[in-house]
Image: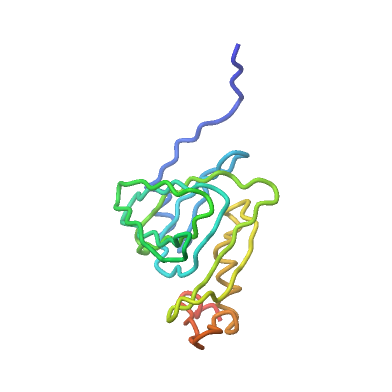
Length: 181
């Protein structure tokens, strides 16, 4: 006989979550975190410039607005996958990716929860010559801790990290982070 575990199946009001993110200025709202999966709603990633490399697959559904998912091929070439509103994209593990979408756009993201010891990496490249600039490492075990913003704080807080060793270009600090300084 199959035994069903005792659990609650929440009915999530995505419209209310999107409204709350707009009203509070927050960028993410974690929907759940279980030993097997995590899910969150993300608002606008227009400022993203890094490429996130994680050990999990990602399912990205464009709830409102369109997503331009920048990614890097195994050969290092940057490409863009367009995910229009109402569409869904499956992304395999370890693909360097940079989700970019307008401040009033929203994505539903579902991932495999990280296994003990798994590390996410964040890579930045020179906006002028595409030379590798910097890498940040984080354990992403809870999106409530906002690891992406922590990686950005470290990167944008250092002119050394933002300066290209090949051509000398200094990646500018987005307005969002310049206001923090």
